[in-house]
Image (cartoon, rainbow, N blue to C red; front, top):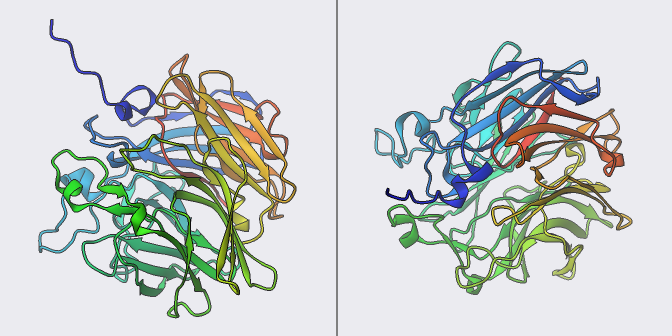
Length: 449
């Protein structure tokens, strides 16, 4: 007998894609779903339709959604995002020879702005999906802000809770400008698009927003054309500490003004927890999950940990401080405090993920006092990113954390609801899903109101 080759790690275990799109109603629940929760919990992630992909980041996007109403889990459904890549195959140029910004997997995040629900990936336009009652997460199509967007859109836009504006950027390309900053108003109209001068195409996954500033992270994970052209290659980026690392600050009230750059120690950051202005506006505080290096084949992998950066706009310096030494990722706050001094932040830990037994937990940091609380899942149960669902109208007040949890012992997944203020307590509710939810990236609680 011929021995079959083992599947790649990103196609094995709970990284493996699921083959079916399902719709199920009246899901079984252990515990009690808070009756205040009426809306959708949606999470996006890669799920290659042909069950093959050269890298975890490249699989076609699939959104998994659970509908909550009046203390019931009324339905579950999962749907591929029907991008042009999904329907026509991977391509770089459209039929007219132009760069095809509709081509991409739309597999990284799902957000709502100005009445639209958007599935995002940083290499292309977003795709709108339909979450209206009676609809089943169907793909509406690519969204280019009425023809005004001419770059890709980051998977991590920021909504200002005060103005309702959506701030985002696009990066990439073989020629300058490698970075463009965008802003859409509360109605969804794109009102600002300006290039930002950076010396090379670096992998810029996230950025930061405060009440007065936008902060870009220009870090030394640099595009490598040779790797991009290699057949069957993986991520076309490599660690290059000689490039340097810096933070770029732009005033929100002068979106076409100068960007001030502040050097920091070489590192990499996929995700920021939050950022805010401090003092009289002469300091900016950022919390990030920081890697000492990334995509460095000659260096042993080291996980991200929580750090604080404090930018002194007068002195032109950055103070860098590690907050904790436990590995973590997927940092989140109450989104109603994005860009404000949020007291609490939440991260996910999954030590050993993809490399053996997993110890999974959700961790809550009190960023004011330094206190730490965690919910430790039983062995073999692994959480993903946890989205915050508020319990009332008070920003920073009580609420719940919602996350998909994979159980390696049963091969099943649940939607788990935890009380954010009593995180160590048993789950408020565990909603049992009709099929496994593969490990994925980001999602949101989208209330009806």
